[in-house]
Image (tube, rainbow, N blue to C red; front, side, top):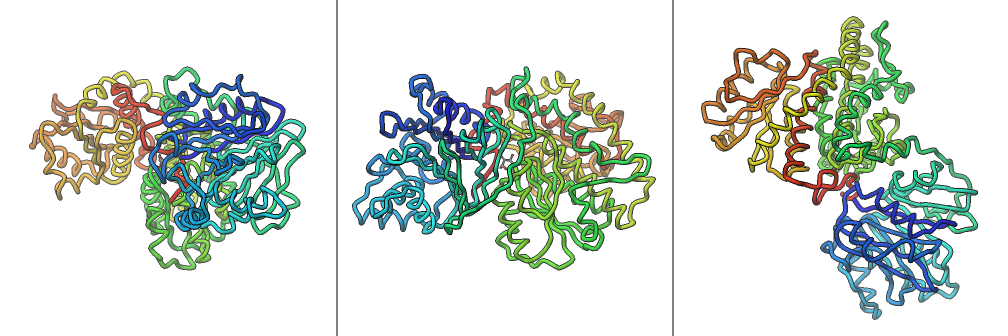
Length: 616
Ligand code: G6P
């Protein structure tokens, strides 16, 4: 989703900001732009399309400046064209703003500004904000762009991550946040700053950061920075943090796409999710982020998991795991639906929020609703220091490293891994799981990296299957038990990056409607994996009878004697059912990747998608 970058310091700001925009490309966008002050005037360059379009009209070396702001836009209000791209300016070209989020009352403000004689050249809510700030500045007796911004923001409803530059006060960037992430990077000698919506845009220059909170402003200049609240109260001290990942993790490392690199990182990311958290000899799990939460974990009676997209699929697996290993009731909710349903929560509930990015607006709002009702909420998050990580009461990090491919892969398997560890932990705490069973599960988990490598080494066969699949406009994915959320995740991966229509569902549900779609042109991917074995084979027969083409994901040796010569089978190493979800999804990730690659899709930045969806 939209990305923001701003820089002030001794380096060439145009170059730093364009480089930062390249770093946030992965979040998903449809237009880009940059503004800087040159020859005492604001220069704005913006283009619809990819960053290369912008680079064709603005070159860093031709535009050496010390202050610049830039933006990647993911359209909400107004189609993705040049004029709707950010930065936006006011009617006098005095200021330029980049804005993430949505100004919900922009129509009222626009009407008021039109009545006062101001004009607009775009359809965006963000231009309204730029003109609004400028109109307040016009009316000020003591002209001050920071105060004009603050007063404008006091009147807007909605969300913003905002940067403002002004040619009248040229050596500063005014930044503000409500509901849209903003991070301040502090560079050399504490008088060089890079502010961005994402740590990936900062790490090239510094690892020292301050997380700006909602309703805070920060003003940066060559002389330093100061923070205050939007209520105009100075913030004297603010903790600095260090970015935890390395620059190399943002490179493709020889792979054609980030997605492929991330699929191949999974033997390692799975180990990272478990490192220091399993005590094999004792059959115990240690989750440091939950150590102060033992009483709540022991006394709670129901778990509600909130998430979106891929994270929602890992939540479904979590439901299965917690119910079977800890015998606790679990409900899985789409965060967006849960947030507005006014669902009654109980004192004995625990909510788990799952999010790779830690910035998903729907999930964040669900967390706030849970906290409003006084119920504890823990996070399972990848991005360290992200808003969800900070707003939940406690949590467990995935430690999967930055995930750049929009379609989540390694974060998904790490989420499932952490949910499995949590399920074992809860099972032990609630006396529903013996330490012997826990030891066995830990032993199986320890085998995973080698088993994943084995699946990855089968990539050429999966690629061949993908090439056959690529000509089918529709694909069904079926599974039972744990195979069902894997089927859902497989279908989501395929549609996200190949744009083929695909649907995942419980295998038994097929006969209640979707079976009408089955004929010789419909490939059906069946995630068998030994789950309700006889029943799933009956479902396979129902498909065969109607001429459907079967692609089977199954444990090694499980299908022997049952497959027909027309069936395609992809085998995965055998494990216990609780662990096998992680193995079952990996061939489906590879399959989607190779279909999309065969079709020439933009795999890391699929159309219309955003990595972190920061609007509701
Ligand atoms: C977006 C992404 C999905 C992701 C979902 C939830 O829609 O495109 O890939 O699964 O957000 O993201 P989260 O960061 O909360 O896991």
